[in-house]
Image 1: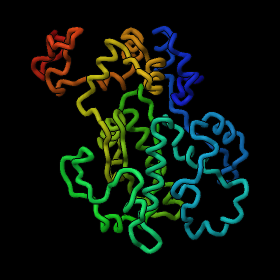
Image 2 (image 1 turned 180 degrees about the vertical axis):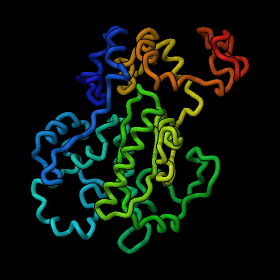
Image 3 (image 1 turned 135 degrees about the vertical axis):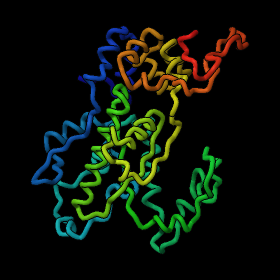
Image 4 (image 1 turned 135 degrees about the horizontal axis):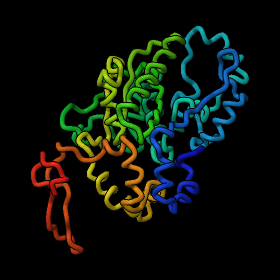
Length: 339
């Protein structure tokens, strides 16, 4: 059964009339799992025509069949041992879309994350020109410049601007970009354990194929930052921290998120023309009653609620003219239930 495929807009919007009971049953953390892309193997190799591959391709078309080659998705350098069968792949040659799905790109909401994933795959595998000089993609980007930019412009609090010498030092490597979806209904600790095992599997796979692969770089968004932090704890990550070179967090809620509390009380906000926001509102709930039916039954969302470390005065009561009447809690270490 399908709980939710965020990229399928019609299916998602059709759920807007679901009752709180139906939403709670649909989003049971013990009965849901991330849909992984599975493939058929033929003598240990990918089988393009296999039943499992065909079924997965039908479910994972949020990464479109016509996805073009990006970065080194289709032309990754093969180790010497693989050159002998390179010309004889036949049915073992995957399309760009299939390789992307196999790397987990279809496990996440591709409508939201696809642009960033594709950009990382393209730019991280185009660091140096054949001459050894820094690629024009980095020297003269079409969008936002990154070389020589003060990290504070990116929200950083310290550090020096990125230089061409630093690009040259890391440019002679292959950076295959993976996406790893996790079950946001389950505890971040549970998700951390599952993702740690997957990282181990990816590293082991490359090593078994003659690659030198020892560590990974992790990029997170929002709640994913809590999952990554949990992985660093031996209780959840089982030592995976030794295989993580670095982590880059985007809008991580380290002490909780006031938005989570607001949505439990009042539902997801009106999207006002934002299709992705409209989908979230339709599926998870437009009222506090609908959202609570999901959140109260799921450890992951509960771990997003503001903690005692959240800055005081975050909950503000206003009049219809936006005049502030009250801000709670008065002291940051006082539980909100006091009020």
